[in-house]
Length: 189
Image (cartoon, rainbow, N blue to C red; front, side):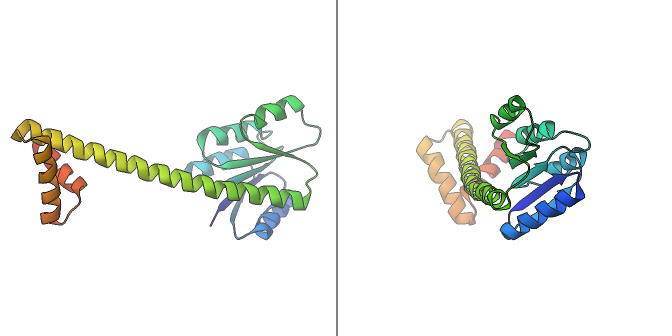
């Protein structure tokens, strides 16, 4: 279930945004009142979408949105007054933060929010695939290091070290990575 965080100093606006988020889909919705609370919460929890209703009591919202953008992978919607500076809005949008002006159109807001969640799902899939590939590369590096260790200390050929690791994995019913770790424990420590 996707997690949405709403940051709003206005209780009325906060309740309205929570209701729209819940109406849009089966999302886990949390809310805080200020920038400080938000910063502390995003250090602990990964949110898929963070909606900031500016101004906040302790920040207009620009600094918070930039902080979130630089320190998390969360999508961000910053809601601003319609008379906000075009220069500030342009700077924020260039960082990949979506700006919506007040007053909000409920249907439009819900569509934008759902669109960000859909893109986030795709992004999460890519992140997960990337993590799997990184793990696979690290496993290969570890196995190769173990092979080199066998070549160095036991004077095996590359092919012999490869077969040795495979046979140990089969005989002991463990992965080649575990065999490699065991070899490195013996010879490198």
